[in-house]
Image 1 (cartoon, rainbow, N blue to C red):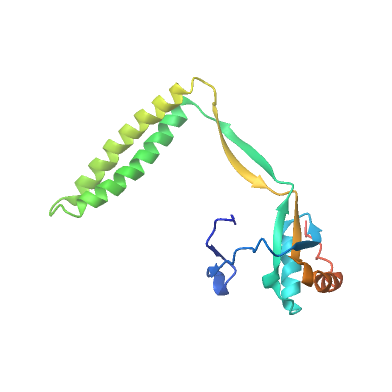
Image 2: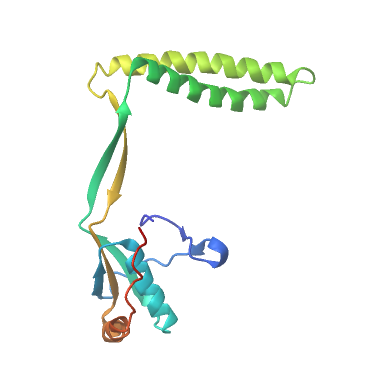
Amino acid sequence: MSASSAAGTGGFGGQPVPVQPVDPSRAMVSVATYPEYADAQRAVDFLSDSKFPVEHAAIVGTNLRMVEQVLGRMTTGKATAYGAAGGAWFGLFIGLLFGIFVPTNWFAVVITAVVIAAIWGAIFGAIAHAMSRGKRDFTSSRSLQAGEYAVSVTAENADQARQLLARLPAAPAARA
């Protein structure tokens, strides 16, 4: 979750709950670090189960790195197809919007809008790819990944958190 998010997803049944911003005037102390987010989450859950005031805790991802996973080669044909697909979705939206106001044969309005928008999307997709002149002939997905996750608490609660986490049972071994 990003710092700009207005709500988390830790509520009952996955319902969003308000996220309180971290008060920068309160000193936070790292009490444990974990290689995986799930381990840090398990530690905070253990603190919560132990009646620790978890509103004074945070999970902080450190050693951040940007990872760009290359998904495949981008060709003019693929760019044209992706453009046509995006155009078709836009045409569907516009067609449905206009179709509401047509008393008869609204389906023809929707189909016409989808076809016209798909054609224009294909044209713009091909042109956009051609304008890149081969400088980026691949598709990719970017993500921000943390090297490790620190469980931090306010300085006045650090000793209590360390004592509780010393009793945290070992994580069950992953099944192969």
